[in-house]
Image (tube, rainbow, N blue to C red; front, top):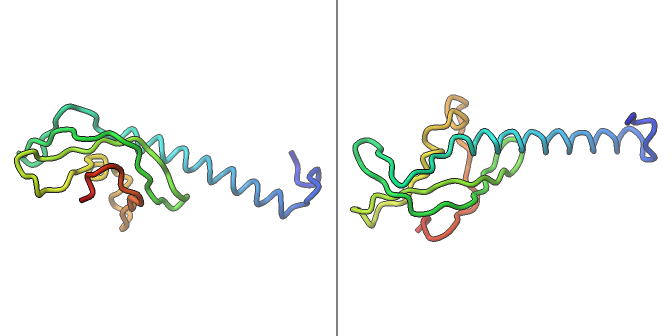
Length: 113
């Protein structure tokens, strides 16, 4: 579709194009982030065994806007005071090297206490 074929002109076409491109960027980011998730009964981090406690969707703020992905949370069951970890956030190159970290915007379940 060409902008001259739209009843609202170039401005509306440009806004619609931008919205579609941003939606595509969020979709691609979500796929890459989800691929970095680790879904196992248990994982070992720095010699400590963490057991899976929850698998749920989380919303992360990116430069393209909010992205929702399914991720897995793990906890050291020997230390009840320790918070659950999300390995995807620790290992993904998406969170490293750019000088900023993606922010998880909404906690899921009880793990954020």
